[in-house]
Length: 298
Ligand SMILES: [Zn+2]
Image (tube, rainbow, N blue to C red; front, side, top):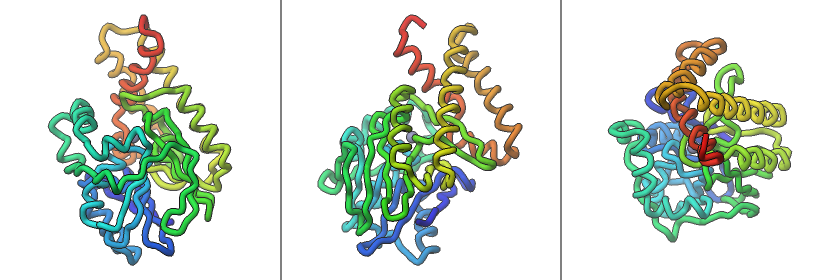
């Protein structure tokens, strides 16, 4: 497996694609947004490949930082096809609702951040439910349904080397193993998420590959640590809902705390890259929405 740093917004260590070679062409896990397509192509060239060699795109989920370039790649590479959970597939084929929802988060920065999001042809998208055993360009790959971060999130286990491609299910890990929860609106569900971590643990993966950012070798230790991070972050947001006058004020206190905590471990540059991968306001907003859905009176 090769890691390609997509150099999101010109920064290293924010979004990683994984590329695997097989007897029948290249496999890309999460090709990233269209704004990063030049970096993806440069990365493929660096390992002796090219976009035209891609036969399979495995999507963990359809958020723009993971899947934005899918339709563009399918248009340019007629022999390629994409795999995605059945609840994500309709939005790849008709992204209008997905883009409307993302525009509520990113406003007029949509284009600068992500670039275009071309629709994928329905006949080149394979919908997954979880539990599949795929032959992906000659490699044996298992699929698990891993909701929590998104209702349509899946993870993949490459059985040839034991690497689990977990998208955002195992959080966002940066320099020094510093890990935070990836909890943007609107789908966050902490109970489902903990169960999804159980599915990944049951695979007993040799290694994890996180989109943000890259391999976590000590898979068991990372999974156990991430369970704690998720619980702790969810609890912090729950407590914040009980105080303060406005959501802006509650979010601001949470964000200030996150920023200070990150800078105890990370350099300024690393902390900024981390917040590009997961804006801290969104971590608060996704968990606030989750708690209010659970207990509407709160
Ligand atoms: Zn995501």
